[in-house]
Image 1 (tube, rainbow, N blue to C red):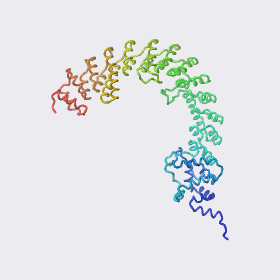
Image 2: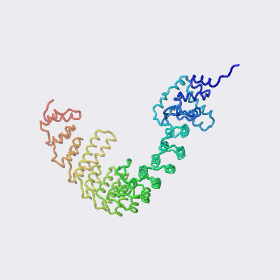
Image 3: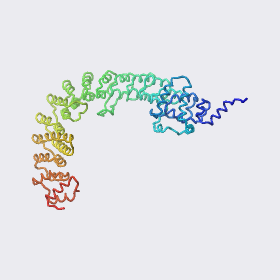
Image 4: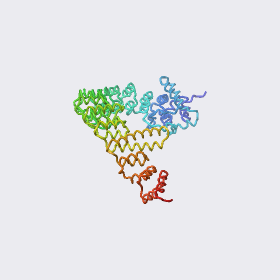
Length: 557
């Protein structure tokens, strides 16, 4: 009768066979030695990349020391697994709740067996083999990756296996983990699992329950950014708690990058500038001092009447002329009226200039008030304030092609305009004239409509204003080939330097303007004409102008 072969000898035999044989026969002692000898690093690494809970549990059951078999394990930072693996992953997760160890072993078989190719098992010993898709992924420590991928089942297995948990709480907060999972991480008790930075992250995310939990665990905020975020984002409850636990208060002006205006502000001024009334109230009712200046009302006047009213009633810093200037420039008539009736600081010419800019359709300083709001604001200032405006008002209206505003300012305001008014209207007229000639269909019609707008403004200015224009207007008319504009300019200023006009018209190839000037006796000398023809390259757009000069000056090819 044959004697049974001892298990030790059988295991030694299985060690010489492909790994899947030991897996299929549940030879744990053999698998344990394979793991300790580093022969299963590839499947273990694959299980880590995929956070295959069943496979990881199987490895832990076979060899609790499996983590120590590699100097550094890593894991994909994003859950971008190969699509063909998705079904098996979900199966693994579904089986996690079963306590029967055989289920984990069955799942582990799937991790090893693959497609049944023997060559597949022989590759298990190659430590550098990876899935092609997984090789392109960002790597993290396993616990950090599992937390960021919200795979808390895997987190627990990895923690039990002894993986480090450095900064895990911070990662969980950044990925919006719930309070229960963060409590679990803190219960592990590792020294570096959470830091004050994690508490700051939670505060900046307005996660008050987590901030409370961390504070109760003995953590403290050591970064001023938490309070800055609370003030800027209107986290009033968070701000009140931060003040209660003694979080650092910024004493110097701070800059918030996402603001339209990046001027440094104290946190009280910042809260007011953002229109955060509840935060302003919390700061006012707290024991914190010296976080408000007159900038608070100046900045709040851009859009928040409620904040302006509160500051006026409960604060003593007051405001400056910037308050009404800002309100007017943002089309905030209610705030302009309130400041006019309750504050003595008044405004400057910037108020009316800014209101005209908004009325004319320029981008407002901040906010999204309609042109009608700016018109009402301008009319209020015109009727109730004495500061007036500057030539910028009519210059801007001319630049935007707003004849109605130009007419109103001309008839009702003494400030007038500068040469910029005609220069800008002429530039826009000639530019849209050229674009209308180059475009087709609806775009051409759009430019034609704008040509009419700017033509009307330029004609009005030429007839009713005496400021005139500069050579810039003439240059733009010649360069864009707008003969009608050029005629208008020449009628206003017959003393224009026609030689410059000739030069610009020739260079731009606008024969109509050359012919108009020649018909009035304004022409190149024969020497200058020959110089132009011979020295300037005959570009396609200039060919007709060259032909014209040859004809007018008797030159031959």
